[in-house]
Image (cartoon, rainbow over all chains, first blue to last red; front, side, top):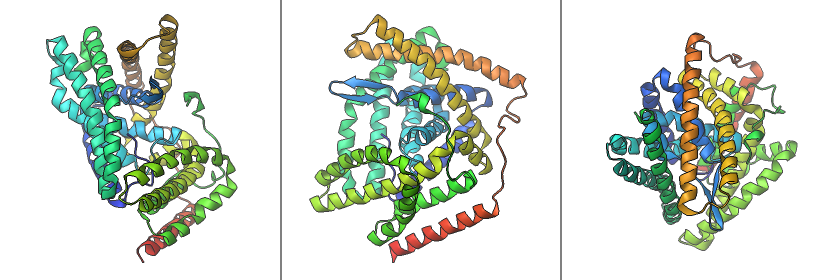
Length: 198
Length: 233
């Protein structure tokens, strides 16, 4: 889901940075100092998830953990993702520093979205219902991210829209896997340490 | 890619302050990203070519980068309204990607995270964000160690996991590592508070821009402005 350097136009880059700066400022304001270590921990998990390859047939992919990060951190996921993507850019050269604003926005918005829509449902009495909602949240987060990537590509050049459609379809298997992993993770956390979701 | 490869190295540009390098590189990268014309990109390529001659270690990573660029050019050629236009667009993007990568790969990435953190400190990035950055870097090593040992034990106990079971095992491992580390992070937080909160937590060097840093910045700004003017002329 990372957009590489050099692909986007100036307008798209500026729009991405404007969105990221605003949302990160909100996120930092809402992040209590006592919760900063937990935010850092989830940020590290988000960073590491991209280094763990999962084989799917002849190909392989990596998870993003967008939905678990969003469901646990809420608005704090914006600073967490900004930091993780910054470290990915300087240590492993994934994405880049100029497109950092756009990449953070693409991944931060789905995380906040699943928190707003599904956050309360994760604490429901019915465990199966929570699991199903977590699956939908995980799938939706990846597909929203792919859609946003398409929007930024389209904002740069309308001719990118066909490539953006390809990108969207390529993310469908990943979205389903991410949904399953999110569902299992949330069910496990609910069972062993429910206060982690509060 | 291995997490152990995160190391600090000495850069040939260590005499210039990290904040000046960071600012110059970002301004230049933004200029290149906004440039489309052939003449502007030719002018912009002077600095990366000079940097490439001095730092040949980056060539091997450029090969890997261009393998990815090739896939991107093929995709654009297939999806663009005209084949020739698609290839040209792909080549322009590939040229931009190479130029930005050479610049960051020779000036920024070899600085190491300590100098980069120092630059962020000097550039007045909010303290909460800087603390988060430091704690995240620390958390990466802790989580990676725990996650690796959990994965090894999983592979020993169940070497042939397939389908949904594989994702279930992965999810359980991730969640349990997170919960274990969360308990540790709570203790860490209490220790930080006992030491006086986050006051003085960041012990990075405070530097001011020196005269040669200012000259480098001005040269880069002049160079970037020339590229922009040529692009829109």
